[in-house]
Figure 1: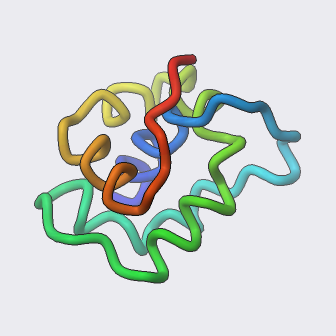
Figure 2 (figure 1 turned 135 degrees about the vertical axis):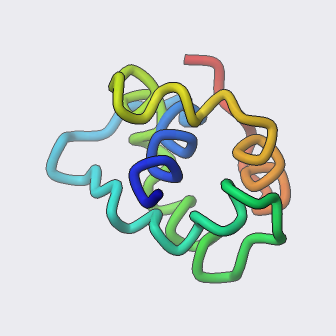
Length: 87
């Protein structure tokens, strides 16, 4: 489930980040919002912003990419004030 969230988030970032900066496990806190469509927590939004540069990298990963296209992932990003990037 945590991987699912990380994948969704990864596909939404317009800028790149180094592999050292990308830590998909930090997005676990967003899992409820991405899976169930519940409102993201402040911690989720904070971690999404911190990982924003990794989203396109996550989107290209076969383990995460399919989750990034979910409607709940887009809603989570929008609710957090993060634009859904086109990778």
